[in-house]
Image (cartoon, rainbow, N blue to C red; front, top):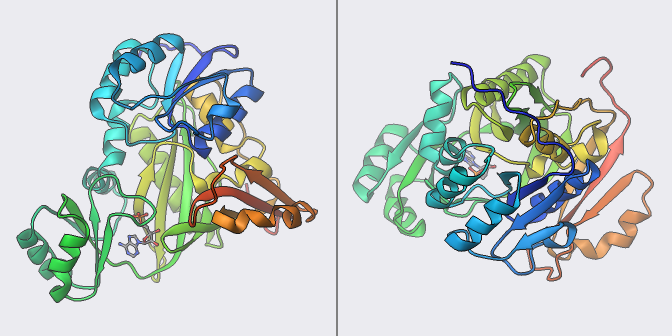
Length: 367
Ligand code: AMP
């Protein structure tokens, strides 16, 4: 059955964003360029997005009165943070246009639902088993072997809520380390590269992907993204097709980032997804005609999607903690673009900003 026609949400309207981190900040900047106002909803009083948005609400994600007032004050609602309580998302959907829909967030919030979804649409993942007790962990380890990684089903990011298991004897220690929470055990993928693809889909059904990029993580946190990924054209096509297929199968209205492994046989295995702008898409601000934040705004507002053409190659490096003390040197580099998030306290490992270095395109004739 085709969906009822939904009109574009025109410039001048107000976009509500749940979450006020750097992703919300860069979305609000892109939205302002197109003439939208943003209203940020975030529980942290010094959220980086507050200072670049037209309005903000500082309240907990389950504060019913604040959510009501927020929904009434905006023309559409989206997220820059996917771990919103189900009840809050349902409440907002009763009163406002919410994109992407709750079912997309629900799949992305739970690693078991996420892996089930990707396997159902024919995308390979690491072998996995759902685990809810030490007994089930022990049997899953017998089936998948070691090394393996135990991850909490929910609320894990940047390596939090994860334990590597080198031998079956480590099972109890790993189960304790993740707080005995419902979990997933994944076989360890010996990968040659980590790549990601960002796809946008609008309510009118337009789909567009950015080039596949390559990511290097240090201490489980993204360190560097290189665009484009140094993979074969077939691998890039396969990764892009998975992203396109996922966006359609989820009936996505918004942006979706999918992280994948390329294993030593050259196969692409999906690791996880995030239904929002993604750290591995920051390079698009300086190297593409339309960047991921503008594309996100276009998709949420049901505008035509923009061209994702890459006009130069790029390397994005995250600036964590005191890395930002090097801001003046970065500003003196002619081909470096510095982005700072306005965070006052430079704690170790905290994402304070990023720098994108631009290079002439090396591959002729690619998108
Ligand atoms: P995640 O929180 O799932 O993104 O995991 C964080 C990082 O841990 C990934 O980017 C990988 O570098 C590594 N990792 C996660 N799952 C696996 C796996 N099944 N096999 C090997 N490495 C993994």
